[in-house]
Length: 217
Image 1: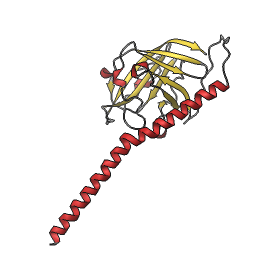
Image 2: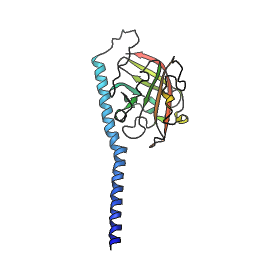
Image 3: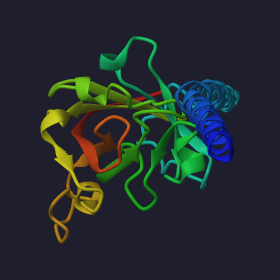
Image 4: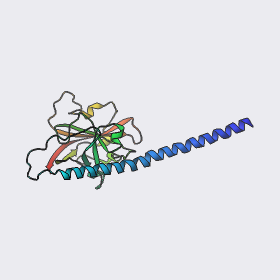
């Protein structure tokens, strides 16, 4: 009798644990995306409104000044046509978990949009809005557009991300000149990073690109 009772309660505990696990997976896979999407839309809307409130004159000819970047705050909007006509994400200064739960995160210390050097960002591939869920679809020649208060910067993808998978320790990908730690940058570059494979963080998928145009507002 005692053994039967023990088996019964063990089964109940396992079933309960399984239900809790399924609920947690559902929370990660669905609800975090709902929350992150709502927050990203709010941040994007707030950025656009703040820019509209302080417009740059159409006759301005000088290159735009440095983009102000404050930790934890959005400062740009990224659009990648290959990922869909409606795809966009705010760009947040920082790559902590709270930052990446709101959009694409900018690696502090790397170049600002349009600047000489490497504008490097990270984004989730699954959960928390998963802005880079389909990053593997990018191909050489695709465009990445970064909008700031003063300009639109268009970058062109240089590589196939499916062929550029590295370990998380490969910090050379976000160097001013990727893979050349002592080199002086002469070109405005962009690097997109995300986890690989899907639902795993054992490696990183990398997209490299270079600036091809700057359009002032």
